[in-house]
Image 1 (cartoon, rainbow, N blue to C red):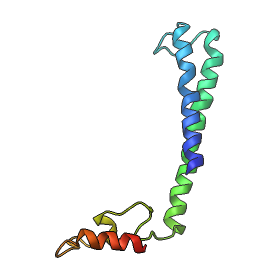
Image 2 (cartoon, rainbow, N blue to C red):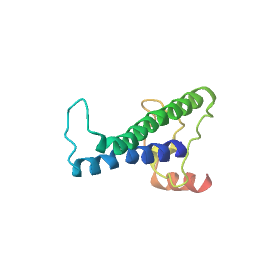
Image 3 (cartoon, helix red, strand yellow):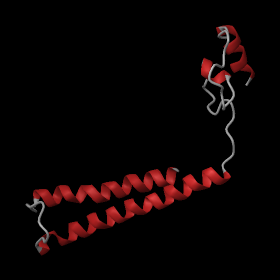
Length: 113
């Protein structure tokens, strides 16, 4: 997931950053054909666009792999989670508490785990 994030961030910057220079150079918008002076930056921008699209192939693979082979989560996936909502199992029922637990009980359970 971190690889996808950085791939997407870098490719979006490669996609859009050259367009700033194209605008400063006077490239008009919304016309079907541009002069050759803009070809290099347009090619770099196009490569960034294709790389950004390709990063979603990796994202799709990651999501499908997590759905098929992912391990179930624990009750507290983060170490700092000490609130009331983390005292429940991952698949909590709708009305989970008949009476809310006390703060002391929550703190005691958070120290045990």
